[in-house]
Amino acid sequence: MGGYQQYGLDGASPVDLVVALYDGIIRFLHDAAAAVDRRDESGRRAAAKRATDIIIHLQSRLRMDIGGRPAEALSEFYAAIFAEILQASQSASRAKFEKAIDCVRNVRDAWREVARDAGDNPEVGEMIPTTNTDPVAGGSSWTA
Image (cartoon, rainbow, N blue to C red; front, side, top):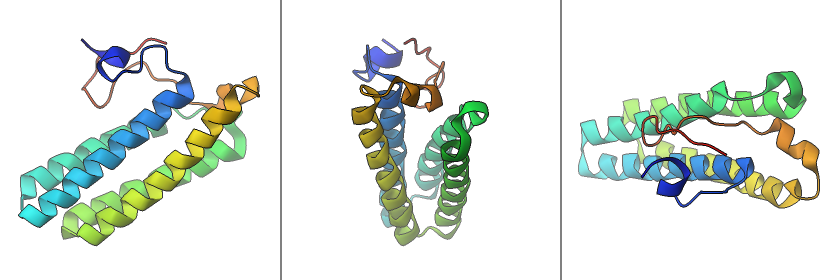
């Protein structure tokens, strides 16, 4: 089983999918922080890479042509959080991973608000990145 069904996202809205990707980033950052505690260098690096892979995917799907300032702000956020995760992994810093988790959680919560508002405003959906592949599972097709 792949795609939406694997994650219980069959029939999910694009905003719900973005929230699920943020949840994945948070999960992998927690895994990386736990690997720091275990002094598991390969586990830390693997978890950090999975988190940054999702960020790269989200960044690549931004619709700068129609997203305007919100898309620019997300692009800047993705660049900053990517750098934060790299620094956390390179320095094996639980504190830096926790800071990244807090930042991602705050933006994820904002996306949840967008999800609530999307039903009332169809234009909101035009700014939302769409996804054709599953960066968490390594490429399973996602179809809306």
